[in-house]
Structure formats: structure tokens, C-alpha cells
Amino acid sequence: MTASPDQPVTRRTAGLLDARGEWAGLRVVVAGLGTSGFAAADALAQRGARVLVLDARAGADEVEKARVLDVLDVRVRLGDDAATALAGRLPDVDGTAPDLVVTSPGWRPTSPLLVAATAAGVPVWGDVELAWRLQAPVGSPARAPWLAVTGTNGKTTTTRMLAAMLAAAGLRTAAVGNVGVPVLHAVVDPQPYDVLAVELSSYQLHWSASIAAQSAAVLNLAPDHLDWHGGMGAYAAAKGRIYEGVERACVYDVADPATQALVREADVVEGARAIGVTLGVPGVGMLGVVEDVLADRAFVDGRADSAAELGTLEDLLGASGGTGPAPHVVSDALAAAALARSHGVPPAAVRAALRGYRPDAHRIALVGEAGGVRWVDDSKATNPHAASASLTAYDPVVWVAGGLPKGADFDELVARHARRLRAVVLLGLDPSPLRGALARHAPEVPVLEVPATEDHPVGGAGGQQVGGQLEARQLGGRAVMDRAVALAGDAARPGDVVLLAPACASMDQFTDYGARGDAFAAAVRDRLARRG
Image (cartoon, rainbow, N blue to C red):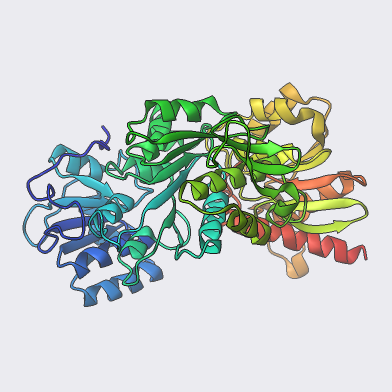
């Protein structure tokens, strides 16, 4: 059984539509004490709600947050103390059944606590749904419109570009939601924002039913997080929620028909427009590329036969980590520009933002160059769709790939890019899924594997083997990447790019994708330093 995103409306929650609602005395269970859970508990307690927070973790970070919340009279149960409630029995709040459960984004719909809430008729909201309902009333100058972004890949880049464009136009804004500032903090800020650039994950959208953005974009749609959502249909439906109630513009990718289908299915405000983004010459109502110019034929007068220049491909060099504007970076920039233009941002502000934008760490970052070989870190490419976008930008490539596959299928990825591969270096505790795809679709490409373990002598002075005994130690972190960089460097030729675009999650051998990228960059620097 799973908890349903179509939440019941109870007598107690019916009037909780904005900050004027009767929040005082509301009994709330908050599931999870991460960044969003802490923000939810804080915001609710500040409005007089009675809050109980549950988290199976009891590390130093959770304990410190619990101390802070205790000052606000918020009860927190951690670790074993939270086990009973987390196992499925809906806990009381101050001796009474809760009126509401607020869940952190990563909690699955099958989590026993959330299933129990649904079975009991208790609404389950995500942190973003709560933020939407804690805003100032409609029509108030303190209520900032939302420009919302989702998609399988490119969300953070697009959202940060969008925030930069809004700021360049002189607006008080922030990148919030799944990136930057928690959206709850932004909507209750004493100094109101003019407009918010809101990144939303499929998890957050699953638990959101009331959000109605001024404009919204689904950048792309490819299989991801299917184990969480239960299938591609549910994943796509979650993404499509971002278009519901849109007032001005639904931005979609012309090259991805699935995103256009979500626009067609959405229930929007009368007058809202579908705005396409293309890497080709734009038609009427689209943004695209004419030669090297980013062109707007959607938000200009006389768009039937004219366009506004928003910048050039050269303006995106900084956004591409110094390696040239990869196609997915151009697409992200156009989507951000479409949202900004829908809000009235002038072309000059769009261009200024693109010229000044720099990507986050581990996103197509040039980390070294020597002997005609460039080394690029795209550790954030944690699924096949993201890796495909990265590979598209380079030819030929020594591809460093692998990790935790999350059940992904790599056949289409390898088949599409086989011709550009000089060699492949495989990481991960189980490289067999990628190895199999390479054998089927790129049998001529050399495949070099970093062993997941190595043998060490047991006991003995000075590391001498005792009694022929060996132990196998799992490799991880820097040891893995040192070997990967050595193999990749030996395979590369002048003119090649060694590209870390793993197409997999990192947690089998690294703390996260950031640690993986840091290890790659450090190993590259050491190799280049040794070779002068």
C-alpha cells in the first residue's frame, strides 16, 4: 500500500490556504529532521502549532536541531525512540490524533507512517505544499510569484540561471526549493521577495497538490527514481503537477514530446501559453538558436516575423566550465530565459546573467589540461540521461563511468555514443550493467575496470604476509579515482577529453557525487603535476 498524493481536506485543514489561516493549535507530525523537516517544524511552531518531529537518525546534526527546536516547544523523537511511530502507528500529538503530517521529500509513499496517515484520513503535505499555504494572501505585495523548474536533469543549472536573470533585472529574488534557500524560509522572510526561482524535484511535486506557479518548465523527462515512484507513469505525473494552475507560461522542450504532452494535459489558467524551447531555429511562440544567437520569438511584439536577441553562444562559455557551450547548457539557458521573459525580464538582463553565470561544482567543470588532453568533471551526471547530455558535448572521449546503477538501463546510452568513445574506465562495486551494455553496443571500445577490492597481507612486521593469509579490502574514495585517472590518462590521446560522467549514483564507493568529483579533480591534478 502507498500513501496517496491526492490528500483529504479535513475540517481542521480546510481553511489553511495562506498565512491568515488558523495555524495556532494545529497538531502536526513532521516526518524527518533534515533541512526541510527542520524548516517545517520551525515555521509551524512560530505560528503556534503543536509539533512532533520523528527521525530514525540520531546523529550529531539531528541532536543539535532537536536542541534548537526544544526552545520553540517542539517535541522531537529520534532513533529508537521514534521506531514505533515510524513502523506505522500514527502517533498522538499532545495526547490527540494529529491534524496533519508534513513529510520530507525523500520519504517514500510506501513509508508505514505515511500509509498510516492516509488510512486514518489525515492529510500528508510536503514541505513545498506547506510553504505554498504559508504565503501571504493572494493580492498582497508580500506574496511573491513562483517561477518553477523541474525535469530529470538540468534543474539546478536552470534555476540558478533564472535567479541570476531576475536579479540582473533589479528584482529581489532567490533560488529556492530543491536548491539554495528552503522555500519555507523564503515565503516567511520578513523582507518580501519580488519573485522566486523555485526548483522542484519529483519527490516534492508528488506531495504537492495546491501549487500554482506563475510560469513553469519541465526541462526533460527520462526514467529516474522509478523505484521511489513505482513506475514511469507515476514519475511523469509527479513532474506534470508543476504545470497545474499556471498563469502565464508552460515551458517545454520541443525535442522531448513527453514534456509537451504534460503541457497538453495540464489544467491551467485561461490565457496561459505553451512556450517551446529548441536548439534549432525557433518557430512562433518559441525560444531557440539562429546561427549563434539565442533568439526569443515568444515574448516580443511582431513575433510572427521578428525575434529578440537574448545573447550568443559565446555568452555561455563561462556557464560551460570553459569547455564551450554544450547543447544541454544552451537548452537550460533558453528555458531559464523563457521563464524570465514571461515575468517581463528585458533581453539585456538575460544576456548579462548568462555572461556572468558559472556552474556549480562537478557540473561540466574543466579540472585540468595537458598534452592536448582535457579532463572534465561532470560527477553530477548521476543517471543515463544526464550522462548522455554530457557525452554529446565531446568527441572523442575517454569515459569514466559507473557506480551505483539504481536499476538503470544503459543500452540506449551506450548505443547512442559508442562512436565517440576512445575507451571506457569502469568504476563501482558492480560494473556488470555497464559492462554488458558496452559488450552489446560498443564491442570494439576498450573497457578498463578499476577493481573494487585488492588483497592485503594479514599481520606480520613491515606488512609481511603471515602464513600465506590475505584479506580483501574494498577500495573507495581517492584510491578508486587514482586508479581510474591512471587508466584514463594512459588511454587518452591528444585531442581527447577524459570525462567523468558516471551515469550512476556514487554511494557505493563515495559519500556523494561531490566527493567523487573532488577525488577525480585531486587525482587529475596530482597526475599532471607529476608529469610536469
